[in-house]
Length: 148
Image 1 (tube, helix red, strand yellow):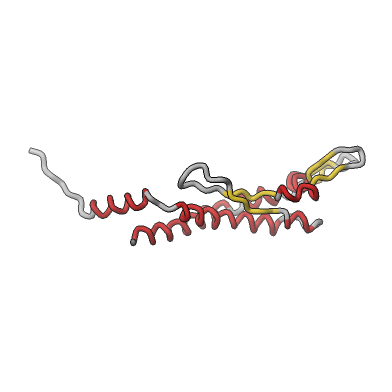
Image 2: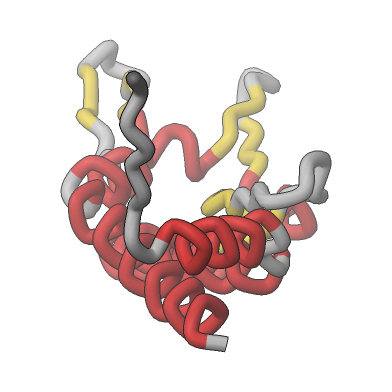
């Protein structure tokens, strides 16, 4: 003969799961932006200061939402400032100044000048802090929603 088992609090758990299913987009957006601000500020702080335009050119841009419940922010160089960033040498070769500062470049003498890696370091050095911040902000909002 089968025994019937009951789980205390199952109805409340099901109700909470239904409320989480309707999680507002603003919760996701707020958490994503909080996490993206960390590498954004780090990249601005670590960018070389030879020209003030390099630091001013770093922006935080949200991607267009393609899927509900998802939000992505890009830390990138401002495309509006490309005229300031594209340099042309005397022989007509074009190069992108922010990329040369990030990855390095070859001099006229053939020597390699290493890059500053300010974008890469902003992400790799802060990966743990970014994850923690996203989880912290999202969990606060989710807790508010679950409490009613």
